[in-house]
Every structure is written in structure tokens, then in C-alpha cells.
Image (cartoon, rainbow, N blue to C red):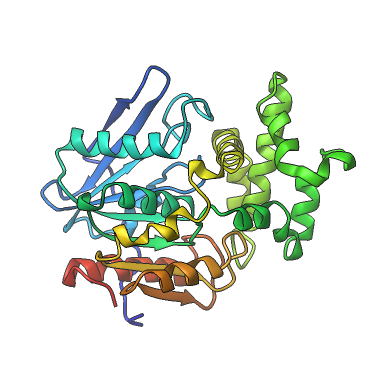
Length: 321
């Protein structure tokens, strides 16, 4: 990508925020930042269950974009935190449409990383006419191979993190870690459920960066983060993302006419680059940028720079380089 790109935009506050009840169980938190008359862009956070943060507002020029962010079901400030019931990919897609309709938006640029990229693809394939294009990072296609990699393969690079991940699981249950965690995360023992969520969230947080970031790991251990990530990631893994195997690749033709850029860390252990490579080759016209000095996290310098460059290219050209 262009070596002369702006840094992250300055911190900014929402000019509007609120809550949106989407059913009898779930209420979403949402916010808008930037230019109320600008080009709409939708930010989709990762996880599932990761939630939004003030840093996520900073990928977009606030003078140009009308920036919409929200916490998905069970995540962040949406309530109830960590709630997995009535929480599926089709329902999340419906939530996005409810939010779009409430805000009076016809079309928007869709920006998502990790699970956010998964949801961006699923949403786009369900509602292509509502999308102007896509900025995607750290591709996760929710295939069985990717789920197995997360549960078992990451130990090849982070053996100490994986050892901590399985430490509370008896040896006889470690052949099926997902089922072992299901019993603990969704059982009747509240303390055991919370501890399992912390262990799951810590495992992911330990593997995000190319270089260690202890302050970020401590955030993943906080219950306000761990309950969303631990419970909802396991919930979605157990149901294969509520999609058919390789659905996002097989249905790429529904959005193949739209501009897309894929930003992928070369040393992403959580979501290895092969998924980004597959998506790029299935999507004629998409642009793939492999960041040579990055892992999975959006805020690694090379990745953050590439993401800002992408939103600037769309601002200037409605296309990507």
C-alpha cells in the first residue's frame, strides 16, 4: 500500500448514541460519530462478543464519514452481557438491518475484522444492495478447519497459552475441547462458567499480537470482556457460525461486483493468512494486502496504517488499490 498514509484519526466522541431493543431478550448499544451528513460506514467488531471501543472510531476521517458502531448481541454495552440464547448469525444480520432502517441509511461501507469480517461477508451476501464496499481484516470464514485450528493448532505457536487454556480440563476430556468448554460455560455452576470464560478469553488474547502486549492481555481477562468473548465464541463455534460449511466462499458471487480490500497480518496465528488468500482468489477484483510485520490485532502499526489507507482510498476514489 502507499507508504505515505495518515495515522489513526484523533479520538472523537459520539454525537449520538442510544439503545435498540431487538427482541424480548436483547437490547443493543449503538453510537454515531463523525459527519452526520457524511458517507455512512458500519463498523463490525470481532469475537463474537468482543464489543466496540473508542479506538475503533479512529479508522475513519470524521469530516467525511458518518461512522456507525454497535455492540452485537451479548457484547460490550449490549444487554444481557454474554447471553447466547437467541444469538445467531441470521439474527445479527437482522439486527444490522434494524439499525440501518432506524438510522435512515440506504447504503453503507462495511468495515469488519476477524469475526467482524465474517459477519460483514454474511451480511453483504444477504443484503448486497445495502453495501457500498468492504474493508476486511484478519479473515475468518468459520470453517471447521479454522475452528479446529483455534482449539488445537495455535498451540504450535503458543504452547504456553494453550497449556493454560486446557489446564482446568481433565485429560480424558481434552480430545474434544469444544464440548468440554460447553459443559463449563453453559452449565449451572456460575463460578465455573465465569472462570471458563476467562480462560477462553485469555487464550485468545495471548495469541493476538506479533509482539507481546501485556496491557491488552489484562483487558481480555476482565469479566466485562471475557464473558462476551468466552461464551459467544464457543457458542458460535458449536453451531459452525450458523452457516453451512464454506458458505461465505460459495456465495461470494452475490457481492463480487462490489469493491473490497482485505488486510491480513502475515503472522496472524488466530486467523491464518490462508483464509484471506482463499477469499481473495474467490473474489475477482478484491485487493489483498499481507502485512509483513503483523499478527492478528487491528492496532498493530502496519495493520492500522493499512486500514486507514483503505478508508482514505474509498473516500477519494470509492475504490481500493
